[in-house]
Each structure stands twice: as structure tokens, then as C-alpha cells.
Image (cartoon, rainbow, N blue to C red; front, side):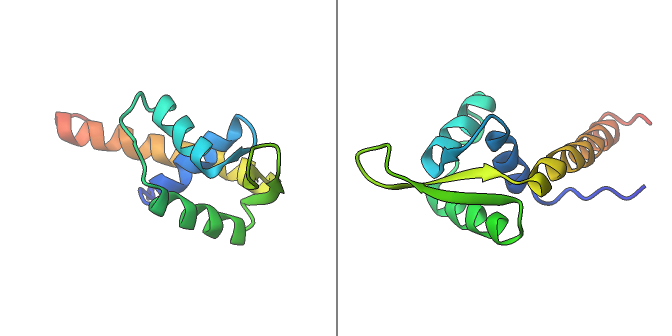
Length: 106
């Protein structure tokens, strides 16, 4: 079975939004927290990916004025929720295969 190992940023973003809607910087903070500090993503990387995922129908956004300044808040769509499960399974298969190859086991 062929495993797609690309798209780890997309999966991190989608997974962070599984916890609920958030603005871009909060998504970055969630990823930092969930990864125990391993992933400290730059805003210049995250925002274009959020916009792309929205364009692909994985996310939707709305403007919120609950903070001192307006912020764009992102949330998963039905398609985005389905993608989290599918992409997680694909990534885990990839990680198991990589670990097996590095350890020299099958």
C-alpha cells in the first residue's frame, strides 16, 4: 500500500482546529503545545496554509471582534473533519514504516 507522507503541516493545522475554532496565532500556540514545543511554526508559514485549506473546503472562517482588534477565526468543515481521520491514518502508517525501516525490522 502506498503511503503519502506529504502534507504534515496541513495535518497539524487541521488537528489543532479539531479542538475548536481559533484565530491563526492561537492555532500556532495549540500546535506548539500539542507537540510539546517541537513545532514552533512561523506565521508566514501558517497563514498561507490556512488560506489554502479554506480554499480547498477543509476550513471556513469568519471575522470576530471579541478581541481588541478584529481577527479571522478558522474552523473545520465536514470535509476537514473527514480529512483529519484519513490523513492521520496515512501519517501513522508512514511513521510505522519509517520506524521499521530505520530499525531494520518488518
